[in-house]
Length: 386
Image (cartoon, rainbow, N blue to C red; front, side, top):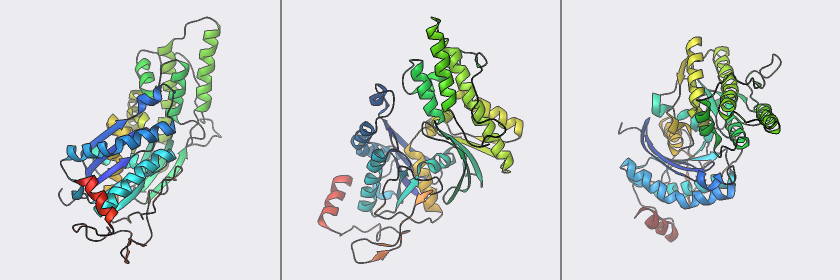
């Protein structure tokens, strides 16, 4: 285990400031600072609020992760950070912090893809990913079917949402039902007391001529809103539990049906589910049953690892280091629409200010020797690591 790469990962794509530390496939620390309560009164995430919250939480969360892991910043073999996709301002906070730490420590920097990280986190739960891996990622911003022959360099999109993502639909339906934000957990809770067959809500993009791997939840969301509106206009009480259960059933039915078909069509004998909606109890249960019926193995991380977290970024970073993938350049920037096919953002050979060109797969000089680039660099190291 001591020979495996020790990597710190930073995740700031939305409203969670996540910092994880991983050695190989072993999770050592998973520190999270959430700003969800600050967004609740707006009924959704406010980008400017999220960015400010990341800025305030960053250093304390990194310090907490290092303490929890029982390591020092100098022990690290690399720094990984979500470079995209996500909210531009929020991503910039994480990328800026990662660059500062990596530069001051003399460690390689890895700007990685948020979606690929959601797949790679399963290694912390169930060991090395099979190759290829079939992944269903479902969250507030994404509903995607991905085939990953190599999680560090080859991720292929098979299908995605053409409008609302599954988690977004949960939030919007919860808002119509006056259940608050975020909607996923509360709808899941109410659904356990309801009848999933009470209302026959539509299943989007399941017709014979529809794209077999794509998703659409906008029509479902509208159908639920109109059904509720009709009840209220008639002066009738809205059966919240039945609506929640029926809506949830429509979502997970489509997700699991398409995911199992993708596995069969592509000759993959297992399915990995990740993203925040993967914490949904009905999704897990239906996926388990359908995978068993189809002879597939289901891999789903524990709920805490399904939501956005730094551990998933560290896991992908550790895999990058272990496989000798190129590190990122110092001009790494956030990309709010980074495609999943770009699992990470490698850099070109670049000058570190000492007149020497270093390969992008190398740390800047000897990581065991102090840097002498300039006075300000040394000052920042003292501030950060004393």
